[in-house]
Length: 631
Image: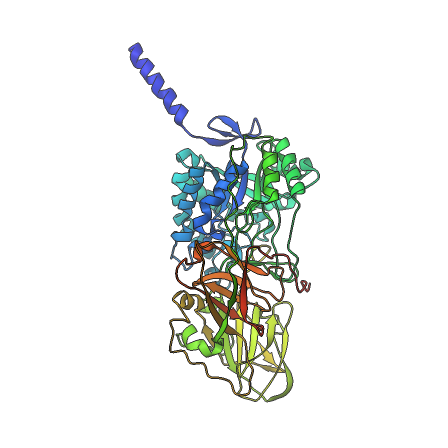
């Protein structure tokens, strides 16, 4: 062969191999290898589904400027497939744009697509429509569950394949399942099925891994040959001991903490969780000093807008707050904290941190006091809120039975007896999931609460109208069971009588409010109740103008009890001012209008104050617990 041709071929070969992108595990040198070089990532978790899309780049840039070289991202199945076979990857669900922004900023991606994610998200990211099959065994090789998983991942994973690092993208590794060792099933056939599915869609080159707690018990059922086993834990005094379980299952390869906890979540009625910057920074230093790879969970928590917050079950049902601030290095509003700068200082001792100033906090503004006027009581608005005829059933059905998965359902029947004296209305088998607001002839009598308040005393005459407005406070997202049905999931009794002949009204509140209700509904008529000072559940509304450019703010509701809040049709989430610890709701400036009046709509469920107003502040109040958790 001509020497010139040989030289040309050699040059082509060297050019090709130099441009080939690779990311793999080097078991001999206990590290990841990126493009042939030993590589260690320092990453942070951020959830695109908890941050307004207009702020994605701002948060990613702050993470990059902290010194991170990667981010970790969950993908919640239920967020993208709200109904079977109906997929949504647009707008605030456009994960591909989010990944592009991360690439633009210079961040690699560790992808965690589930199908289960936990994340304190409703049902751990699994769609509630799976529960239409009441006998389904979730996260197992149950054929009905696998069929749904296969359908979902056949939509998601092909979108991710071009974004894998070796294909020119920025995804360096992909998690299969999540903390499976903490689930009861321990179904290796299920894990094998997922492994084959991920390999079929993503190829043989991508690094696939699992994450579990750092104990042999959790790793035993959470790991599988071919999937690299990683662990999670927060700040600990002995780093070598903390990684011992991973080393037991992975004697060679990189040390990886996939969830290094920078803070913790909050439950309604408990104290706000905090973790000191010094403690978090020291734990990070200890891991980086021994060469470990670290992902900080969370780096920014964000907000559980709408109805998306999940719940834990620790001897009782514990719903998660609307704020997912997590005491993270970036606050709920994306502001740098002292913890962030402590972390940045630690990273700078091991990696090059980008030069230049940290992007500042987003501007905040206290818009002040906004009067709120009562619009009408919920049961008087049923024609608007529930335009379809009610479902009639001898005994109550769950939300899932009639294909309503979030929000509120009204259950209606008649008193079967005269109850001249206070008579117990109760769910003896804890069948109210999760809160039931009880009314007799439209008069609020009290609230049934899962695991806490199983009885409310009522009076009335035979034939009086009994309404129970049931609120879904979020499905369980972690532990042994996710089959968390909502609504009246067992019979209700009045004295010794089992109540029957129910009418169930599915309430479509969000669609109505986003369409301009109640301002655009001029035909509403709400008759006054004679001799009754009934106040709840009821809707309130008010407007305010924004001076200049809309800025982020926080809304406090002094004296209000519990309810749901919308601004300009956007569901900001639940408030529970009478319990805490969260006392303000984060209001992104992105949902505010700079010219037109901004509308506030409130559904108050338990009791409005005499003076009904909201108060916009510049700072959040996340640590004011009024009523301690009644464990």
